[in-house]
Image (cartoon, rainbow, N blue to C red; front, side, top):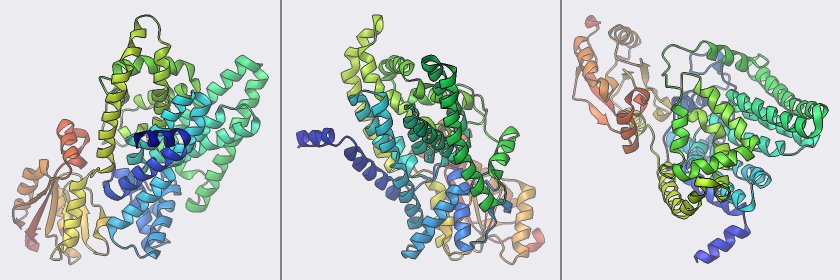
Length: 506
């Protein structure tokens, strides 16, 4: 049986990983229900849901997060998926989300043939096979590929851009520029990697063909990028009324970011990439990957430029690194061959490859199982579903957790939210809901803020039963325990069932 599988895999270097990648993504889309970050909900799914209710909804001038600074490309695509799902009779919130995840996963499968093509140009046959399988089933690929993350959606066009940049013909360089611009359309910050790629192409041409050759190749890259940018601008003009308006406003936003964003040190991303080498396998992989990196400038310099640029920005999230994850996987796939070429004291590392390989397979298999069964932010989701099923609830006020209204389905529940317990804000929200005829009788907080929330509610004369705790997924709890400042959204959530306060108390 094992021999037959091996023969099939070797005989079908693209079809076999595509099939495995499809199975992994399908499982992740159906089982792993959680949102990864707030952006995949508030910047993508929420506007799509708003268009589902009202196709004339004006996102750019709405109070929704991301309004005006994000392209309509991904939210509009998700809107089309939701409309198709509704047409097929899919109505439950959970299944609508699964439909969008399945669509995102199908799109993310493009990374597999893109990796196959690029790796065959850059690596030997064995390295190309490893790289293709990593694109298919590396634990981060099925997980990220099935979330509504613009960072993950930039991966396929970026890989195709790398592939076309390995050629010198004008047509393929135009395609390389267009693909890199498309990657930037999904995630504007990919422009840093695109510029680094252009620099590598230019320097390589300068060394081999002189200045005229370098200028010609850069011109072809710029032509492709310019054409794709023009298409983006026309799309923005059609959807927002401004040619490249979201891009311009996004740049302005990032030049003066909100003060409340979390901040991390400049070495945070270095630690993330080292972690992905699965210590202690790092001791074997890192020297080999470093050697491979010197021979792969088309991969190395876009990767390094992207990581260094983001390391200089104080606000950091691990998902920001997703666009260049495939470049890291290429370097990882090149490591076994590079190990054989190490010299001096490093040569002995080649003898450690076999046990290291076994360790990596076991670790990645376990990580893949966790990824495709992930229940990220389950505490918030479970709290939202509890509110949906609570037919006695009139209105809910959140003193911290995000309100994910998608899980309310057809339930029309009045809500208010502030990011933390605050007496003045709570007084205003209580009064607003009371004036609207739907006095608040359900209150939410993070478990860590439970004491503050209880004191506030008592001070406003709100009489409540003991809160019910939604503890969420075990890995969320562990992540929150290790780093509570950056992972509040993964904290356990409390819901109080209360009697509405007397109007006189407000």
